[in-house]
Image (tube, rainbow, N blue to C red):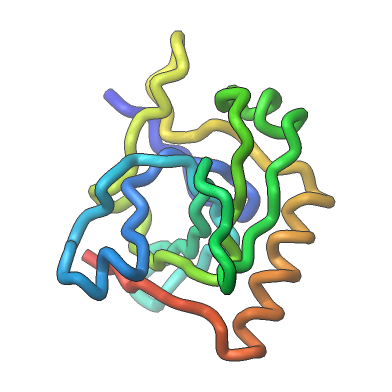
Length: 146
């Protein structure tokens, strides 16, 4: 049985992230499970958590994409691979927690969807860039409320 903890900002989870261009093409599920960082959690009137996540990818950002490179030390802390990765901060998925798109990390000895937490300084940098993109009208949002 997969362990699904309560969602918290700064957690890095394994998730079937649906990119905005995949969503625009009519896809309903992401092509690949990947790490994603929770940036916001809310509780709605019906006591269900809504979660906002940003994707973590190995693909360097293309021109016009806003992303923050993840330091190697943070990747090691989370148990991720040694390849360069970026946190994309101009697109999000929004879903109801826990949701069907959570996946076990595959880390030996655990059946959790949670890799761990981002350090507070790095999390603030991500949150601040995401906020700037929201204010500038540059955020692409994919609602995945099942």
